[in-house]
Image 1 (cartoon, rainbow, N blue to C red):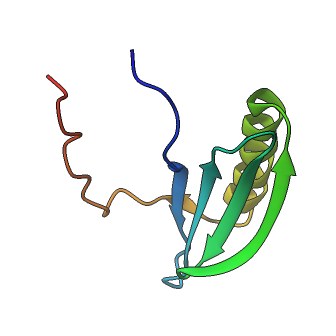
Image 2 (image 1 turned 180 degrees about the horizontal axis):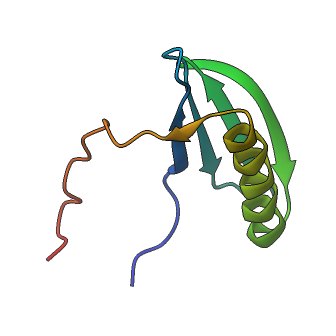
Length: 85
């Protein structure tokens, strides 16, 4: 089983006017950082000591954005993870 030492994209959203948003979790010790980007520019970040509340917070932000018309951005092509079968 691998470790979670690399940043991970939690979600990507797109607004009907073309704006894009994403949330990422950057692992760290003793705290990790939950960060948000709007149009590939850093919007804000939050230090978290546990991933469960971080994921819950990211889902709250996503829900708020979806309530404003944002939808999942499926236009992003993901590269296969090296070594994945």
